[in-house]
Image (cartoon, rainbow, N blue to C red):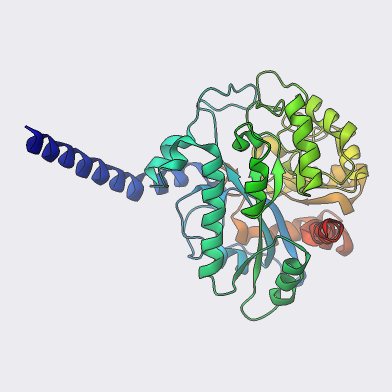
Length: 393
């Protein structure tokens, strides 16, 4: 009986591996094609003036969820929003890669409970290591590992930015023939800490330099703008904010509830970021920042990254993005604004990353000065990071 039982178990395991392999080959690309869409497909035509201007910029984007998907970042794909060849084509100097570790099922933009997760099946279908199937922390560490492997294989095309020297090395090589693109790791939601402050140290050691407190649901830190309670900081959240500042790491307020933002503002001493957001002045949604919070973040010396997706800007046109940028610039100044695309974040955008020259052209058409465009398209992020890393030495 025992030999027969072993054979049966062996057959079952082989069949399971075969099924997972088929899923890993077919399901993730189909899922990504479904969720990461563009309104207009490349190539994108722009004026000679816009092309010349864009090619002279340092371009930075504060948010992309590309590490979640089973794509080779070094190879050009015909779907999704970005990869290294397309980043280079778009003249991107720095891309923030954010790690998603949990997303509720039946997702909505009003009130999501925290008791379900749709990422587990994706990790299994993509054949991520088994520890990631049940651990949010392991999912974050694995995505950091993925990025480091891409960096190692890129032969200098992609560089992880973790401190002032690595930032300056990346900048020195950005205009070289090989065109190095900087990559900064961010965490989308502190639920990945699994309730342990010491896990922040593990994430820091893995290369994370930016941390969002919440994502699409409330967690032990506090309330999400799309959670059920929309509460402020908990005692654990206050301790975490203090620990983030002490590391130091960049604190990201994207997805935070109004009360959570208010509570953070009462205890932080450094500049804040909202990496991918809209503004209620042009798109009145709880997901987006109020005028008061726009002013508070800018007053901290921080940066507001405007998203490219419908719930951020109430539309799917380039002009909708520009409208949010114009409103915010008139309120707090263009020097506090940046790009926060949310590329590859299960959103539909007007274009993929190679369409960024269209945004440069639209900013010109909207009357933004060249100095303002230089800042919005990436100069403001570069200034912020230089000051942040200088202060962390």
